[in-house]
Length: 266
Image (cartoon, rainbow, N blue to C red):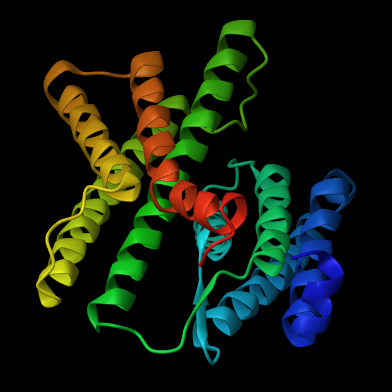
C-alpha cells in the first residue's frame, strides 16, 4: 500500500499518523534548540497521538494487526518507558533516536496496517498479543539502555563523561531489570501460545515465529543465568542481549513481514 492509498482508505488514521510522525520528526530535528518544557510538550503530544493511532487499529472494526502495528506499539511502549524514566533520571538522554523511531513506526503502521480479524478465534488471542508486545517493549527498553551503557562506557574511557551523565552502574542495573521483566513476559507469551493451540486441539507448531521466539527466550535465559552465576557484564552481556533481541524481532515481526510484504499474503 502506498501513502496515497493509505490516505484514501482511512483518512482519520492518516491524519493522526501524519501529525504524530511530524511531531516526532520535529523533536528529532530541533530538540537541541528547544527548552526542556518545549521538548516535554512536543513529545507528550506526539506520544498521545501515537496512542490514538494504536487504539484506532486495535479497537476498529475489524481489528487489524501485523508486523507494522506490532512495531508501532513497541515504539510507543519504549517512549512510555522513556517518559517515565526521564522524570526519575533527568540525565537519561535518548530523545532524538526514540523520536525518530516513533516517526518511522507510525508511518509504517499507516502503510502496512496488518491483517483484518473480523472475529477473534479465541479469547486467548488478545492476551497472547498483549503479552508478546509487552515483552517486545521491555526487551527493546533493555536494548536502548544497553546502547546508552555502551555510550557511557566509551565516554568514560575517552574522558568525555560529564558530571551530569547517567552513572554506568545505574544504567547496567536498569538494563538487567528490563531483561528480567522481558524474560518473564516472554515466558508468559509462550505459555499463552501453547494454551491458545490447546484451546483448538492443535499441536504446537514449530514455525519460524515459534522457533525464533524460543531461541530468544533461551538466549535471554542464558544471559540472566550468566549474569547471576558468572557475573557477566560489559561486552559479552550486551552482545547476548542484542542476539536475544534479534531473535525476538525475527519471530513475529520478521515472519509477518515476509508474509505481508514479500509474499503479499494475509
